[in-house]
Amino acid sequence: MNDDELSAEAESALRVRLAELRQEHQDLDDSIHALEAGPRPDQIQVARLKKKKLGLRDQIERLEDQLTPDIIA
Image 1 (cartoon, rainbow, N blue to C red):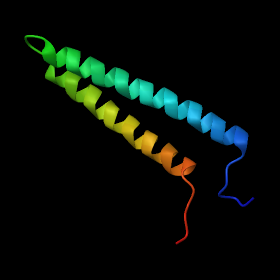
Image 2 (image 1 turned 30 degrees about the vertical axis):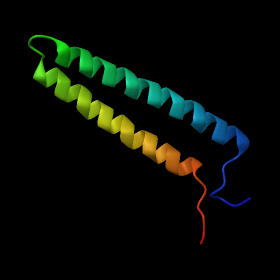
Image 3 (image 1 turned 90 degrees about the horizontal axis):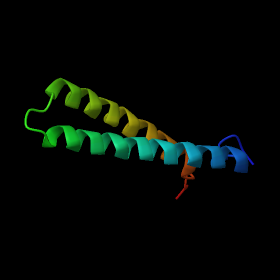
Image 4 (image 1 turned 60 degrees about the vertical axis):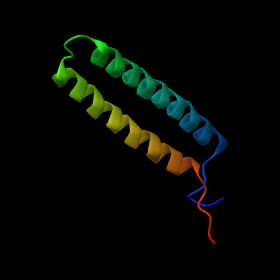
């Protein structure tokens, strides 16, 4: 096992965190759609939620990269 490989516990913890982030990302998406569906959506609030959603997407991608093994071709 080298430094790049994850222990089973670490991988499990990352998968749990990944699931939490995905759920939070989906919740933000739902909130954004609900705000935009209103008659006069608060554009500042929508922009803040979208920015937070993008930050979550970045975190999700980093965790996915950690969980994906490097393949040397």
